[in-house]
Image (cartoon, rainbow, N blue to C red):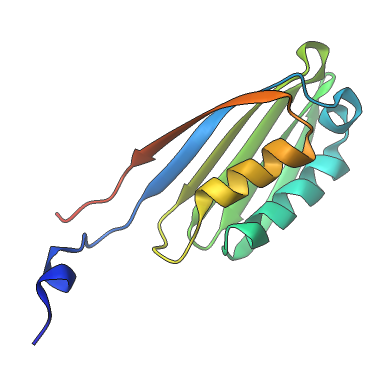
Length: 124
């Protein structure tokens, strides 16, 4: 027989952490390879599984999208403003999207950041 906690657990776990990074390292924000490496390591920090990663140089900035087994991580940068946005969404109970987000903020040398969390779980 299952315990009450198991019966009350949502069928789909959804954890989303997103926010903005301010006063970041300009050179890091301009470098697609740096952003890719930071995101790859953030996947590991968040106990996630990387499936694919793509990046694009857009003007001075960079956009990187990592598809993870559990969902995705995105980073978009605006070096001219020393600014970046980050979204870490995970559907795995075993993952830590907060750790992944904070790792990205640390590696981009954000002097400050805003971090929001939302629960996107569902029990149908």
